[in-house]
Length: 426
Ligand SMILES: *Cc1c(COP(=O)(O)O)cnc(C)c1O
Image 1 (cartoon, protein in one colour):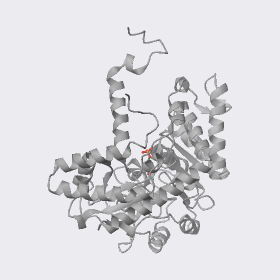
Image 2 (cartoon, protein in one colour; image 1 turned 45 degrees about the vertical axis):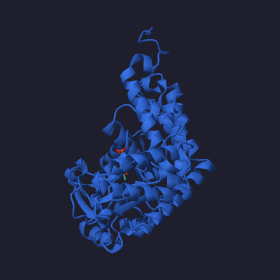
Image 3 (cartoon, helix red, strand yellow; image 1 turned 30 degrees about the vertical axis):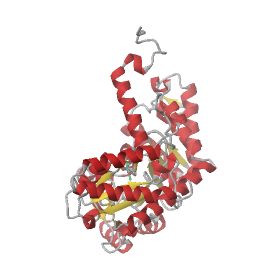
Image 4 (cartoon, protein in one colour; image 1 turned 90 degrees about the horizontal axis):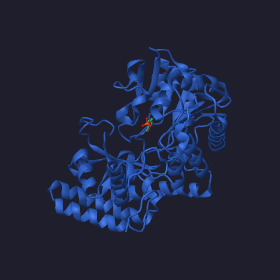
């Protein structure tokens, strides 16, 4: 018998079999594929548990001790825990854990420091920057005057002479560093020197690499960028959310920009899950995970290059590999779609100076964080490179049987590496 919908013990499968079936199928999908999307991960069971709590029932506009609703006895403690853990893990003076996601966090930065029409500077999207760093289709490119730096054609790396020249000429109010498709170490110190020269605020968007920074596998922006934004769900391996960290000097302006400037009530269940993820990120295990992500990416990059894959910048320093498939005579999109059918999940991506359109670009983007969380190590990376190569060959001859054969092999290969939150029911 189905129970009443108000019965809090009623489970999803009983109340909504349609949604339950799709969640189950997604669990199976995430379990059976090698997930190489650079922005994705597998969160722990503890993070899943916190995300699914009744903290979602509570409204908490404002900040701890200064709320607009009563009943914050527990929420204030949870948010304070998350803030203190962020401050101690990253070594920052201030943290705001309320932004709903990375894009709203970045919008809050604009609201804190800029007026509409102000000049701002960021890395162009095709070079690896993010939409919210002033790209044209984003509100940030429409409401501000964006100036964009790129990467050098020869080696795919940031050209700091170009950055400096542009900064001196355009004098942006804020300079963004960081991005979504940068396979190399971000040199926060060099950006910091340029920002100081023109009295701009350097904002480090570490959405992709926050887990590497926390785990000691990438240099920290602290001391160079007075403002740092990050998502919490990429390498940091927390729930979908974001944080803004800063020096004490900018704390008030940023807090006011998040609330009441941009948002209403914080998502308290997410805040709790962020606190859990930050505790996990403070452990020796997490440092090992961060180092392993980079070791895996290096091994995968090496194995790919041996197979003739052309990597932007010739390799990687972090979790991310950007690959130009022109030499393999296939576009990024058909390659990504074929690999998905072969059990390898990644995304097509523009490469710097891409002659093709963003919806049908030349490259693919690969990340090793989710596979590392699952327990894969360097010894498995050669297999992955081989499967990618085989899938591309099969795609070029429309060999669906071969793609299905690879997918079956990958499914079997992954069986010893279970994922949190889902298990094959017997
Ligand atoms: C992912 C990402 C964002 C945006 O995060 P959402 O949570 O998707 O809004 C912002 N900046 C960078 C560099 C990112 O990689």
